[in-house]
Length: 465
Image (tube, rainbow, N blue to C red):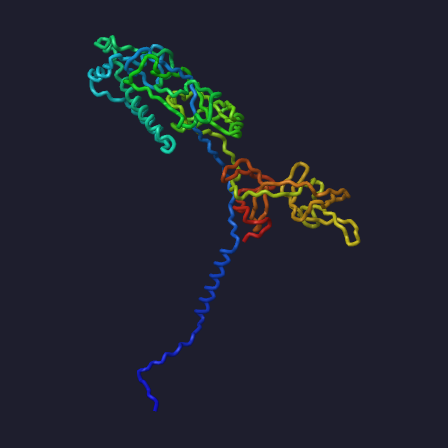
């Protein structure tokens, strides 16, 4: 009798039990896989809803200021101390600065001043305005060196304001031991005082070059109190005329636009104030175009600044705003209006195309052709069913016209009807991303129409799912 091992376990394969749940799960899984595959392999058409809007161009420029400026030089050697506030208007005979041959005036003012020599609220407000203006226009990547110019300018302004506050005690100097060593220097003409020179004082529009707009080539010398000067050295600068100009570098299109306007509204970015400038242009030998905007006010605000940031306030074009990627160019047949008719019982437009029967007899066949634009005498017709060299016949006559004249239109693909339908557009203005097109045209777009965002992704009359 065979040996039997009671401890041996025999495994049996369980039968596959297919139930309705597994079937449903498998169907759903296959459906998801098919949908994912179709999504990644199908052509995706993105639509865009047409909206009314406007485009504002980049009208911000860095301008160079041109003023009537006269540099006044020192008559004697010595240490200069300023008593006229920078940016203030002085009259002939007003005290501007003193020349101290001994260098002891500063010590005298320090030892004989009474109380704390503090700045007024007006002075502090002016300094704060200068600081805020510099902070808003500063670009560390382009003009970091301007930090030092600003530092010296602020130090000079504080010292000049301080001297201005003690101007009432200047009479005491005349009765001191320094009387013979201090020379008071008055204004030689009336105007606005500034204490810096940069070599641009005699600049005119005809002297402008592109290189002048590069601040790396610009050097400004700040004239400070207590500096030692020699006879003939510059000590201050005075502007006797309120009229001044700003010069910007532009292209030909902008030049024509500004000259056509004659007067342009300008916003000064430093204080957001606005003024009107009279337009004048000049083109140098290299072909560089410069536009000068002349003002009759606001000069005193920018009297110590050579570079002024401005924004030109120009009228924005308003219409239908569409992305440039939606724009496409298409060719059409151009035919006289007399040859276009409506066919049969429908309202469809088209032409009577010359055809021949099997017996060779001449006849006509109505071919539908949509109108996409028109002039006074001609229509732009869709040429999908027409060929160059074919003849069309004028209705109720025997006159024929050979299809040969073609022209192109700029437009977009409208998908309101579920397929790509070309619509002609008239571009008023555009930038790198968008265009403003004319609204309410006979064959164009309307607000809230849907168009293809990227015209390159579809073909005309293609169904859009």
